[in-house]
Amino acid sequence: MPKNQDTSPRPRDAEATQKRILKAAKKEFAKNGLSGSRVDEIAERADANKRMIYHYFGSKEQLFQTVLEDAYLDIRAAEQKLALDEMAPKDALEKLVRFTWTYYLKNPEFITLVNSENLHRAKHLKKSTRIDSATRRLVDMVADLLDRGVKSGVFRPGIDPVQLNITIAAIGYYYLTNQYTGSIIYKTNLADPQALNERLDFNLQTIMRLVCLAP
Amino acid sequence: MPKNQDTSPRPRDAEATQKRILKAAKKEFAKNGLSGSRVDEIAERADANKRMIYHYFGSKEQLFQTVLEDAYLDIRAAEQKLALDEMAPKDALEKLVRFTWTYYLKNPEFITLVNSENLHRAKHLKKSTRIDSATRRLVDMVADLLDRGVKSGVFRPGIDPVQLNITIAAIGYYYLTNQYTGSIIYKTNLADPQALNERLDFNLQTIMRLVCLAP
DNA sequence: TAACGATGTAACTAGTTAGTGCGTTAACCG
DNA sequence: CGGTTAACGCACTAACTAGTTACATCGTTA
Image (cartoon, rainbow over all chains, first blue to last red; front, side):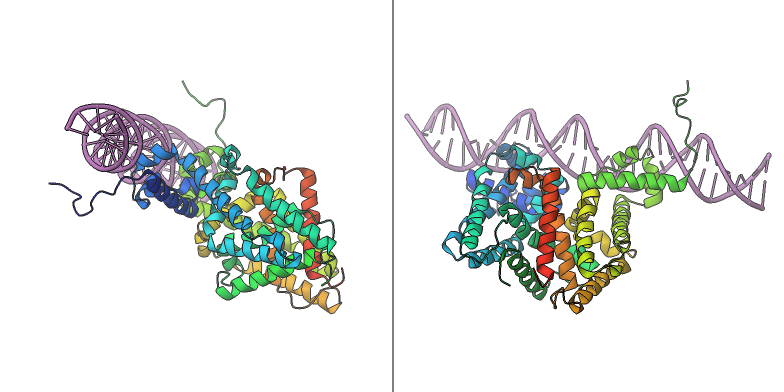
């Protein structure tokens, strides 16, 4: 007696299967970290077979590396689409702060994946050859932004674009990644929509006051 | 033939054994996260037996909870020792920023433990009864600091002490927890002593510009 | 000193987990 | 249509891992 007559076999499609695996792996790795994730669970979530994971990605770690690289490439691509160089410096800076916050908020897996990778001291990213040039453009973009602002007399000079980038990321990232312990420690729900808006406002103040000349 | 004649049996000391276990567990959990850590490894590191871990702490998760609670109690106690209420507002604020940075730098396990706990959505901290009042005092201390600064005309009014606290933590914490991926992404060694000093300076600027009235 | 609880050890168990061997089937091409 | 290749799936294994059982020994006190 045949077993799976109700579900007719899926048409064979290597690319689609790989995508399903990557999507499932991203979810699983983001939820449980690298060592907390189970390859069997990823296979099931992907509606695929564990054998396929090893066929396409070689190992659990290589799968993690691919997921991580994809995540970095995605945020870097999204940043490039902002086209900050076409805007007035102050507007561009505000847009970058808002974008960074919103991206983290809408892509919580990104934060968790990066945390996992740092727990492993960037072991996988070190091996990667796919993310080299991507960040360079972001730093250049911010450096250019700062230059233009200084020349037009709205920003103060001497600000390091890398430090600024890190700070813009930090004030959003930290709030969101530590929202669970933070909500307990501060006895307030940091994930509440109003709390989120207040945080974004506060972050905008922080960056504007840091960079701008006139208050 | 007896095996362990070279190492005479350790005198029995429950408290000392628990301390050794806690110390080893902190190291192991900080290095590998909760699911990446192995109870056998902790027992070995502690120069104790696995049976003792279960005898004193019940389970791997309860051991983690104890380690985490101890870590929070330690930083909160250190903050209280700062005695910020005895200093001029500006000096006190600068001292708090410096302290927070230095504490994270010298206690990297704290950051990793908190990250692990947030991966688990604060599951263990939720159960804890030992860390309730500790944070309240920190927030009160900062709130008082802000009030005094506003009254003496050096700080601008309306700053939320919780948001400020979070920001002070964020700009240090993020830099250090993401130093591994950051060093690759930005193609510079973020852990370099000079880089660390530059970051502290930048963070001081960020907070002072955020809080103070006159630049 | 006998008894008893606290401290310690080693060996074991039941369940889990990353990774594989091998057979099957669909798609494509001559 | 025959045959080759790539996609897929089952069932297995070797190693690992949290937690336990059974037992030994120390130290204190009745």
